[in-house]
Image (cartoon, rainbow, N blue to C red; front, side):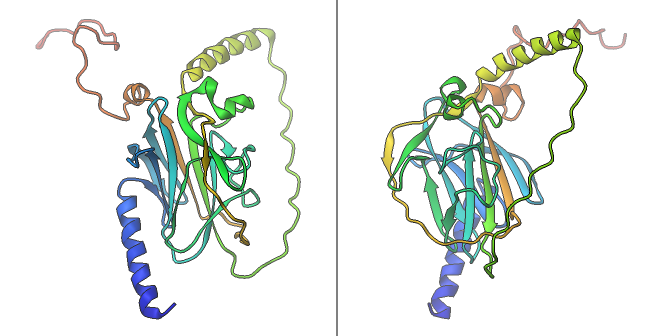
Length: 266
């Protein structure tokens, strides 16, 4: 590729990234959007943007199909590990966003859409927002990352190095056993928390969709460059958390109870 063509390609890629990052969670390396079946963005509400970790809320819609659009904002190839509700979208396995997991590869300034759980080299089953009890992760009893779309970005190593086996993790130190009374109170609180969580959204295993891929060689750097977390919630939850303004409160039905105040001057 000539220098002139490469310069034009770089400028176009940069402009596309600037347009995407204006309405999406992003790092210096990639932008991440969640779109519906017609290509419209689900609105994002950033809550943090610093260092290598970026977080935002996404307003989900019940039963809506969606796809995850990742745009490479660099002139290098990057690998992205994508997990939904804590499960790698290629293998379906529990994900820790590590470099040894299956990942998608994006060329310089390339954008790709990921619309479902991959079941073969040619097919995926579509993502859609649903009640948690009907989610793909819940089918495996995995509740460790409810309602979170996560993307980890790895740059390509410039020099191929032999892979080393990973040292086993230290086992957590054993804690003293709680008393019977403590266990009872804790179990009640856990049950209440689980009931609340059952009302949260999850991602289902939808219709089959033709979306072919090919294997490519890619040696990822050991260090992750960025991690982006999108917590999707129903509108009423975002209203309750104060993430979005849902209009004036009903003056005859205020959930925030308060006693009558003293009159002015008293």
